[in-house]
View 1 (tube, rainbow, N blue to C red):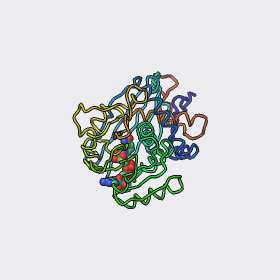
View 2 (view 1 turned 135 degrees about the vertical axis):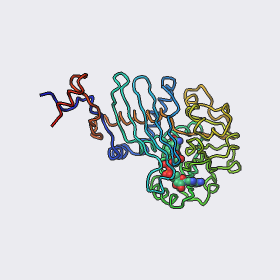
View 3 (view 1 turned 90 degrees about the vertical axis):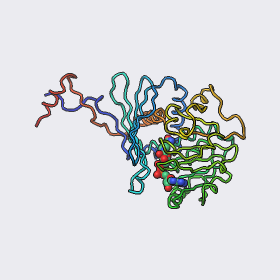
View 4 (view 1 turned 180 degrees about the vertical axis):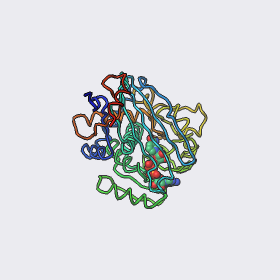
Amino acid sequence: MPALTPSDKALVPFVSVDHMMKLIHHIGVEEMMAGIADYIEADFKRWELFDKTPRVASHSEKGVIELMPTSDGDVYGFKYVNGHPSNTKAGLQTVTAFGLLAEVASGYPVLLSEMTLLTALRTAAMSALVARVLAPKNARCMAMIGNGTQSEFQSLAMKRIVGIEEVRLYDIDPAAIRKCAANLKGQGLRVTECTSAEDAMEGAEIITTCTADKQYATILTDNMVGSGVHINAIGGDCPGKTELAPAILHRSAIFVEYPEQTRIEGEIQQLAPDHPVTEFWQVLTGAAKGRTSDSQITLFDSVGFAVEDFSALRYVRDRIAGTDLFHPLDLLADPDDPRDLFGMLQRAKG
Ligand SMILES: NC(=O)c1ccc[n+]([C@@H]2O[C@H](COP(=O)([O-])OP(=O)(O)OC[C@H]3O[C@@H](n4cnc5c(N)ncnc54)[C@H](O)[C@@H]3O)[C@@H](O)[C@H]2O)c1
């Protein structure tokens, strides 16, 4: 009687939301973001190996659904992610995601994972990695503008990786400020609830904008931004969806993940297509300069790039090895005779 159970290769390790939460608690949220930042740094330092393409975006009136593929030649990965700013009004998340890694040699998947939580961790890890390199030395205070899903992760990654001691919160929705302040209580940060974006920026060396609005919004105007700060702009990540007044961009040294994608989606969509920007991976390898003076404004025009998700999935794959924090998922049809898919189907009948 031929086996009706799939082979080991057909059973793909699946990390559910429950398993991801257990993994994060097992490692510690800050420790895990620091670990993911190390994996991102390692992958950015071998940038030229990767297949790179701007993500494939399907836009609608309400939001966007995107596929983010990449490969380093041995392993292929992609993330499915959405961005729907009005979802929260219906009790749904703005951003949800899942992702996959596959072996390039056989094309067989080797990991399927939830990535809603993982995206929050990897986005914060990336922000903090960039700030560690570009922000003023000894930055201790961050303005956190937009206190939704990403905000606690951003704050804790900046604490763990950059050494931030105080976070100043502002959101147009006071309930979001209260939620973020309550979640950050007892996490080793001084938390100040602010009444405006200007108030939040008082004394901050790092300014994070992390709002969700499907339009050209102006979260920061030119006169609000003094010299020497580092801006971590997260929320402008789609055509027609930005957070900064163009004048700020003209005063800043701009750092990006992958220019071909950022010019479509980032703050720099507001600038000429040849406006000079620096690719962050080149700062890591020493091929380009980072901050060049204390008075310079550095701007990380973050949109989120596929290699960061690949790094985060790679990290998860390494961490779940030898644990029971995954289900073996019966994902692939895998007949004993590889050309007899129909026979396998017939044998499974009644
Ligand atoms: N760059 C990246 O890699 C990356 C990754 C994930 C999410 N994002 C983007 O980051 C943004 C935030 O994501 P989220 O999951 O935290 O969304 P969210 O909806 O949970 O939170 C957004 C918050 O912004 C607030 N807000 C809206 N307009 C504001 C304004 N004018 N001033 C102050 N606050 C304002 C809202 O009240 C809300 O609390 C989204 O735009 C999302 O697309 C970017």
